Amino acid sequence: MIDQYPLGELSAERFLAEYWHKKPLLIRNACPDFEPPITPDELAGLACESEVESRLIQFNPNSGDWQLEHGPFDDSRFGSLPEQHWTLLVQAVDHWVPEAADLVQRFNFIPNWRVDDLMISYAVDGGGVGPHYDNYDVFLLQASGVRRWELGPICNEHSPRRDDTPVMILPQWEPEQVMHLEAGDMLYLPPCIAHNGVAEGDDCMTLSIGFRAPAHNEILRSFSDFVGEKLGRETRYADPELPLQDNPGEISAAALGQVRTILQQYLQDESLLTNWFGRYMTDPKYPELQSEGEELTDDELAGWLEEGNGLTRNEGARLAFIENGDGTLQLFADGRAYPCTGSTAQLARALCAQRHYRPQQLPDAEARTLLLELIATGTLYLEDE
Ligand code: SIN
Ligand code: CO
Image (cartoon, rainbow, N blue to C red; front, side, top):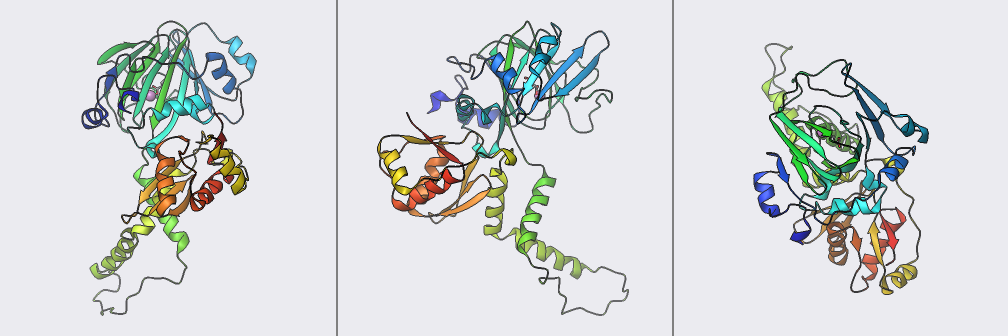
């Protein structure tokens, strides 16, 4: 298992202990056998599709201006670009290209539910998105050409930035470290480190495996929405022990304590927390693009698996599980929850461990019912070998 991690000589344990979410790491030849999952032409093709999120960023070295255009692009747009200083960035390529989804699986030393997407950029000489910082961890894998990476200080929302540009640009850029990445090399960056990646020469393709970390404001809003939707309007603040107050305008410590107890009561409810967080973290990135599933009969599924075929997690699907502590668990698939016990719990663990599922033995009837449901909702699809 371990030799498939793109960490060179470094073990996943050491990476997590010393670098993850802490400090940058350059790994030379992280992916020696690396084949880019897509060609530059195919990437440009994706950027012409209406469902695909893409950006074209240009820099004018004479004026210092930056220009941002959002896709979808017309085919002809790429023919009319200058020879230097532009880059095309395509988001969530792993949602569209199975080989790209498989590549993301090589980063399985980080839990799947932390993955945001695989973005791919293509740049001509001098192209890049400028000095900036991101709020998430990212692995930047060089697929072709050469990119010069310049690293700067740790930034935050108060760090100065240019107010005349459509993309975040940190002013007075003074790199503290410079490194050149060639095909197969990879740079890991934790959140908030200022960085600037500039293509040196043409055909510079960089893959960014980006992770998500929900903001505290999103966590609080989403959890309270989830709990709030379950509660009727009849469950209310109550104060049967109300004492006479000296000043009717005072909100007493007892009243505040009562509100705190109400909030804690929901926070301490393990089942609420489990059911909300699992759904929340497996909500699809693009819910409107959820693929349609397939209605199969149990016989059809059994026949399919008995012939040695498998099932594959849809490119855009998100799966995770939470153990209940008694051998049962909750499986979460694209924002839906499935309570699992026995053979379904075992199946859920197997489905969450890897994208491709090819059982040695035919799963039992209960497990097949779960598989049929996940195929019907489009989370899994049939894959022959
Ligand atoms: C890239 O240009 O491929 C990476 C963009 C970034 O630094 O976030
Ligand atoms: Co960045």
